[in-house]
Image (tube, rainbow, N blue to C red; front, side):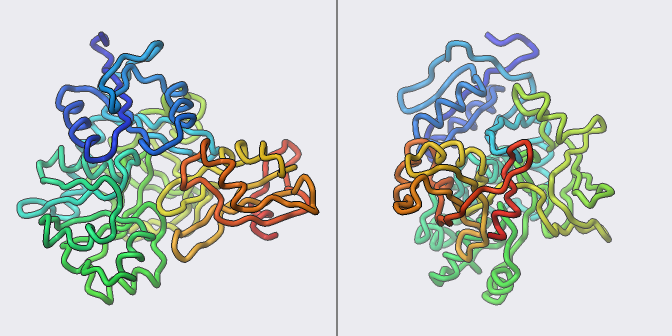
Length: 391
């Protein structure tokens, strides 16, 4: 049993419709959850369990204690995984105080209350989906959960399920607009997870969609800024180099078991260094650039280093670098820059994807391959992704 300064941390590996009631039950009982992708390869799930060492696991076979598992610190609500800036997965430890602040602040900004119903069609193992459930749990606004994004079901959800607020990523927003979905029937449509292209925003507004841009990170319980305005309880400051800093209860406590990585982004005054560059003028935040190497494809954070570590073992690859490229559907696509082991018989994109499929989730698989003579690196061996993109 956990001590008074600890709480049980349960890894939950279930589809969203089953995960949602499990999360609510855990929060009701004071426990913390670590939601994991039920569709991820077993090897990836195993690596995360070894890294984050939850005390229990809940999957389709039931709830079981884990040998060597360690409870979370008291007051923890969730540990969510993120690739961070290095490509190595990390566990973001989010608190109950942050859950309360995020839930009330976000809902107040949207005036969510009587007559509203959230639609959670984003995966609950990502913070964007989990935060929807959190906002509903904190405020009592009801919600409907979909196991996955289903275009047809999301399109008719207001009429058939009574939903009024939905969170999307730019990719799913574009698909719904392309299909002629009546998104204007939602009272509010939130778009986040990646920058929303101006032309896509203009198109949605032109079709009568009440669109709200959300900015946030896994480390801030998701969206902490809506349409440029920080939510209640969220402080914003711009550092001298233009980096956006965030402070408030919604900011993570730590990266689980990684104090050195925590110190790189969370300073002694509680400011989270986001790695994003922007401005904060007249009370509004504008993100102008991203300093991180992370590829955001379809709203999913993809760590290039993790992809490289898998694909470098492909027999047709002598060396490899991974970076993102603009994509009209996904926001960014994962591009593999490959030095072939045999230039007369270079590997195909399909062979790379097939090789990695058992080790990487689908969003992390490359969508383009570019052959190069060498991978540009620093003297220490770090891939120079900026130079890759100029290839």
